[in-house]
Image (tube, rainbow, N blue to C red; front, side, top):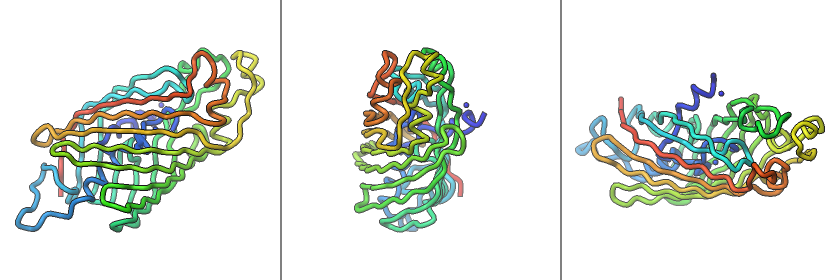
Length: 293
């Protein structure tokens, strides 16, 4: 994962991809949920203009949240174990246009109205390491990659977002994914609480790379051969809670649960003694907010 160490630092924003960061997705995602929060309130009147380095409805210019964070994600799609990633949080935004973090991806709102946002998006995908699948000799590792595509987000109300994303991996698993997600946030004093759900669809390339077993790999791994086609990968739910600690400090906790379905659930990798249909991800971060005009 050289590219992975670059993109993996963009993580744990206040807003689940196999072994990808969970999403309120989708934990897509916390940055997206936070963005919805910032869109929810109108800009302050001139006489009450926000000072730099304070929390507000949305950033007047550049905004950077930075601090220590930690993630625990499945070792590989269909795994019953977790791998822990001590990764700094880095969330970057420019006004209500550009955003960058693992949860929200890297994107830009080309269309940006009260109820509709449309634009390009790139998300990191952590892949599958050789040591993660060491129990299955012959299964190939899958490298860290970026998934590039676009999104359409519809907001029927200030605190509810329905979003569709379609992305194609540039290397790595080489597959195509489509995520349909619904997110909701609530504001309670210093707390921002979000929850949502997601359906993920994937093409045959994605399924064969992550859940398939070639005849050659079956001989060495002890798994039966498996050649899945396209279909529904999982259904997931996620939640996060973010609290302002005073000044520009903020603390965030989040978690997600995904249930593998259909071809993913039937994979000999998932049904092995090292596998599971239940995929859990959790994380936390403390961050400091900087603002620049």
